[in-house]
Image 1: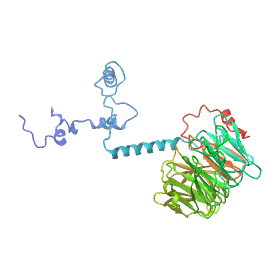
Image 2: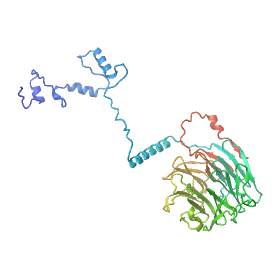
Image 3: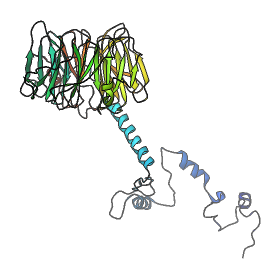
Image 4: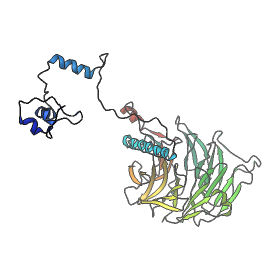
Length: 460
């Protein structure tokens, strides 16, 4: 056995006598730096423009070594010692909280990708003439049914426009002293409710284009109860709710000869906005006295409201329930208010408010992205007579659309939630593909196709 000295591993000891030969190369894991060619190592680490080869090996040997390290046994490219990361675990989460976190991350990634690739249109995709449309803020004379038919009242006439083929049909026409003031498709889009300036409320069959009479009493050709114009209507199953200038809200059961279920008179001015929630358990009503009432469907007969919101400073016509948060309601005020407010109707609180400084005539939620679109009328800001898209819940503006020459009176969206139509006092209907998912491939759309899609077509 060797009797090693204490300084056996010392570089000083090894270099003190250059003629002495040692065959101990160092530990397997901690190499002996004294036995290394540090100059060559430093050159290999710092030189990137040329290769440094060991002169003891020729080119043939180096080529064989490179082939062994970069090619497999069959001569296919192969790399050794390449870090590829650990494979994803195939174990499914067994905890509910893990599953919720995973879904939240996926939803966030999906939303981020959509906003990253989504591009808002700068023009409408179609323009239709709308002659004689009433320039009245309080009316609600446009609705897009699930049958993909747009109903629009133009003066004393009411038209049906089929989106699939562009066909136009005149459903009704009344005398010069009368005209429709509200229209609303039923949930199944088989019938259309029409309110009039002279307090009438009728139901029309969209397929036969005939006025529906009560089967048990054919003499009944309209629903009674109001003594002022019916400017707001809304369906909840077989219940038709109407709001009038006489300050009342009436629930009608369209199946029964005695249609009147309940009559509520808490608004002190005209009822100009009505919207049922998607679940049908809550009704929101807006009035010209600047108030919003929230009603529970099961307690409306007693006239007991759930909440009353008085934060607006002008009439509230624009009402819209959030499609992905059933207890969230958006409302918009008139000219002297100009605010979009988001309400939590479960707690009775205002979540957020933004002052647009322009009359808000309509609100529509985006079902594909967390956004809301507003249509504006009179005002003192840049939002006047235009459409604005807001991101929810931050309520930061995403974009605006300035194509109407006068105020935007009405807004509604297609059944698939992609297209929004705006009706303006400039007697035009403008269709916007603003709500849809991001386009995957726009290369197939030529300049000629884009030009033809902007053609103006008369509604009649």
